[in-house]
Image (cartoon, rainbow, N blue to C red; front, side, top):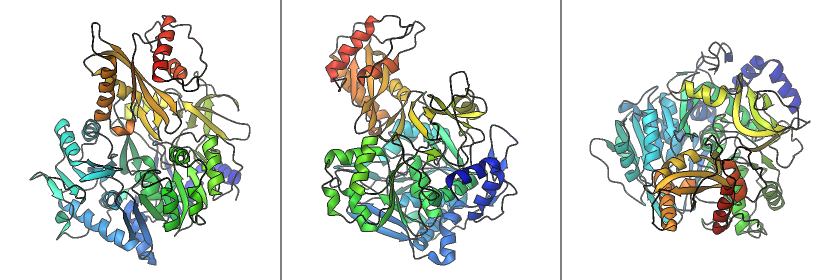
Length: 631
């Protein structure tokens, strides 16, 4: 069937569409129906089913005779390590860890925070939680103690599963001191911690609380798969909120399995047994959906890459992995390809490798600029497919469904809506706009399986953040339009969450940190365009009256504060001291105007600005930093 026929089939009878799709999952008790709409807007999918995510991702393939197929390939140019785990080996490791966790009292419904780098043990930990019905919450290893503590407080985990360190080019990041500080800061204390000791840095373990990964697994029975309800949370994944308080995205088990299984063939066009590589991190949603769950569900070999697109050791890192492991599909962020292009603009290194296994490159996480897409297509000579989705949705809102029909590519567009997503463009009054007109991108409720049913312990915040502005619709927080052929164009964020190298980060959280500096009276952080990372934050700082300290020193201290509290992932390097911030008469800071000045874009002076002369002061300050670059 063609894309339009499949999309129309879903729209005509979504219940039949999703029940048919659910046949690809092994059910302990099949669902009686797909949608459970009794408690809107908290819709549930396959809620009365009984299922286990780990069984579907691992055990069923062993039972079906594919135990010797590679499940995970670990490629770590940083440590010079390559390792492969078969589905049988993965099952045995997962079952043993699950048994050890269960022996410590971790069970169905309990939370476990996973704080690990890109090593196979991170997947083992995620799947071990799924095996016994525990709810995992993976926290990116680059986050500092303050951010980790906020997640501990919200999730109230029974345990933390961690590695002793992460490894970056040229340095080792010790995780254990960060964890110890986070537990000290947190009001909710975990009962125990499990630490996987990496030889690059052996952590000190606290008596009575910390357990060694290998030692605590000795002499315990492997755990069987525990049946859970279809509506049971599989995981919590925290994403930045505009208030600085992280939002816990909840993923229900059954819908998560059904949707991800469907995407592997229909969107990514891979067959069971193919090697699939999502070059992301397990701490982000891509790592959850397309490093861990979806490839394993579909019996693909998933690649875990511990390295960088450039510098580990060079700009050919990606090509080496593709050649050495026969990668069929690569999925990464445009940032990665911008970095490779900057280091090797003519693509000289590409020619040194056999990339004949590669069929498609998928890009997501931020808007893929046409220049990057064009460069990638010329170098790789394969289709380059932009697609759009969010932490909240867990899989593509819009994509080019390569396994159904290879649709014509339109530069700047992630193509068309996927089944389950009825996209509408709204103005600020909640009125639907015609094709071609820019507005807020919304999705008619209910959202499809695999998306979030709510936020962890925050139903009211779920409504307020996503549903209240456009009743009956999910507010994506993105602005864009749909053209006359149904192609979606995502143009910008509609709030102040910025996108740094594919990572959504809150400028509000950064402002909160900068404002904590003793010399700072007021500040504003905006996202400005960056050729490598897409966006980077820039802080405008107003000092307390009478402060006579060196401005550059204060700016540097503010930069270090953000790096200490939020972590290097914020890419926070730019700060400038200004006398005043431009505001409306009602006191709203004109962040959008400041960002446009820095980006060298035209802007309209708001009629409500309290003092237009402030704009000239902002321009002078930006010029001292070298902005706008285009001038």
